[in-house]
Image (tube, rainbow, N blue to C red):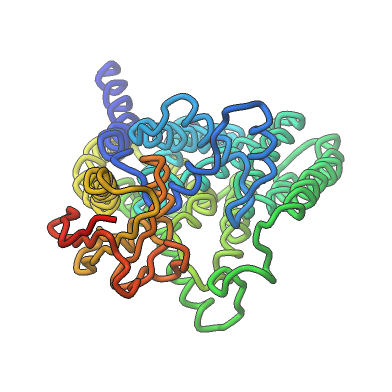
Length: 462
């Protein structure tokens, strides 16, 4: 019976991760989308001086760790999209490991820490986008570094925590709040007197790292609140903020709350009372979610990527609750919970698979469209004019896949410079080949998007 119990525990622990890899390993890396091409074009290393150039450059945002990750991928794999996608899967896995390590640092039992990790990896929102859109690794890098930083800090490893904080901040701007959040954690979590004294030193070190980040950032052309486009400027419009609260509550907490409800039905734990340690961890998890969600709540633009880092706090809180319920449950109901944990992820696998469909279709359309363009344009010289009649009746179209980076995409994949015009025009495209609606008869080639491919309608010799 004991061996059977161990096998059931192993199955319950393994099921979420089997589903995670079963869904995302086949779906990752089918092609590049939108901002990916900007990262690929501007972050290549051919000489040592390129390292400093990448550290000092920006693409509107200042995220040198992300830029260096693209440079490393290109140096190793060239333009193999599959390798970039698998890198994102590895980074997401690292995020899951980091949540587990944070849970253990907070004295959660192994099972509860595993539960929190699985909740993060199987969140219905954010994780799919961060893996299947290569540029989504900004959220993955920041999340992994921020969570590992906090786990190291809780264990008293301040030097390692400072290094990881640097990686987090230089991966994504919202990680700049981490010194304040982590210092608050040190205040609430039970520590000896010496640890409490160290929190002020950590706050000074953390603020110094953030100040250094902003000082370097100020030497670039990265956007600021004053120079950002309207959709990236903070707004205090109540209608926008209230809508954002509802949407991000769903994106960060729905999966965890639904799982806890199912667990409560199976375990029937009764009223759970928390000790000081558990109450402190719950408070810290809630603080984490609110703090890292705050910038997103004030932005007009919404993205599921903004849920990746805040949702860690919800997962930690869920881990605490699950641990307490488990301690109160009778043996028979624990067995039922393990059986459910081993089965439910597989029952939900089609849902996770369906949520990858949009991104896979866009990536595959990107690869086909660029291959078609390369084939059609072989006889034509560089700087030719191409007009593309887009099909907006499907999600995978020129506007959604390339945004304003069609010219850059073609340049990255072929090394050739062309000018593209898209009809209807691509929103926010530029007049320098990013996608104007018409060139008044100047086209050398006219193409049409049909059935997910680019077909030539007319052409002329130059």
